Image (cartoon, rainbow, N blue to C red; front, side, top):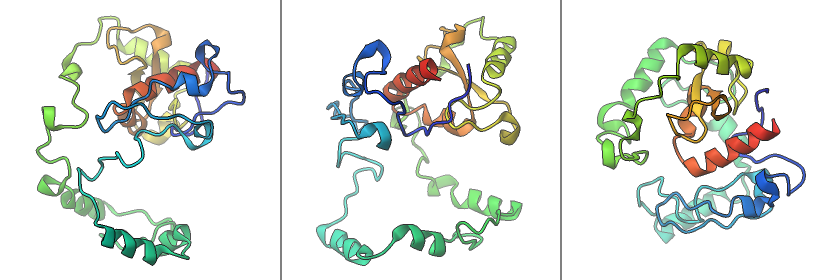
Length: 228
């Protein structure tokens, strides 16, 4: 059993009937619903195999907490972007607002700069400030306080990490590069299900991703585990 090096936003595989149970990709992901809370099903199409399964129905993304640009603002932004290669512009002009480093030049922030960035995004400046419990978009009724089974031991976690060559199952980063032990994740999100087939190891960043859109991640990780 090895680590998966495919992108976390993509579904890989050649034949469209390669999914669990033999159904097509469209059938396999037909139950995915929009994350905005409308509970409407997302229409899955064949090109999503390469572009990734969408998390929202078009126009339903609430990343800006209900804020919508006026038609006038949209037109100004559209006119400003016409004829521009945004990828090149961003690489040349996107600078860190603290240390002024240009994206792509390979310069790492100093410890002082990191502290400045942390302070600039702390307290009321943080978008998640005060959004605890039911106010938090990741709140799932307090399931995080449920205890793990007694069999979820240090020895079991080490075994899982060894099974995946101590590399993140999603992005493939090695444990040594993380400078911390990889997290052990329950694929079905059931803390009591500590069977070896239900456990994978993830880096901190990828583990955080799996806390959102859980239906999607459960399906994807099960598929990738079978086909890895």
